[in-house]
Length: 178
Image (tube, rainbow, N blue to C red; front, side, top):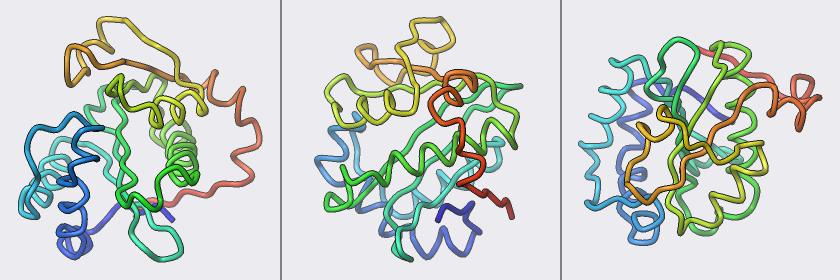
């Protein structure tokens, strides 16, 4: 399941998220330069909410396995990011499933028409995931502005490309906002 967390849920899971954000391999793949303390995770969520971002926690069989967000939402555009934290859960389809469900909700309920992301060119698993959900290389100025680092790959997806790949997703995914 995927939830927009309450303040209480953020506080409950901040230490776990911090450990994943600060894991050396995750940091390398996310091109992070500094570990993220639990208090910084809480601040990230609070600041994101205040800015109008939509932040989510991802659970698999009741266990927290990651987070994702649509950030920088302006009109019908946003930037997307996702992390499946535990190494044992990476590469098992959780990220693809969560990304698909969140994009369905983003297009349908948030009215997004253009979603971009920035990913390390060395993060081959993430590049495969994004291609599976219809992302393509995007060298536009808008995408470039979202790049975290100059050598990152920028990609984007539109509802038209997404629903060509997932025409039946509406019958399989229900998203509820609280």
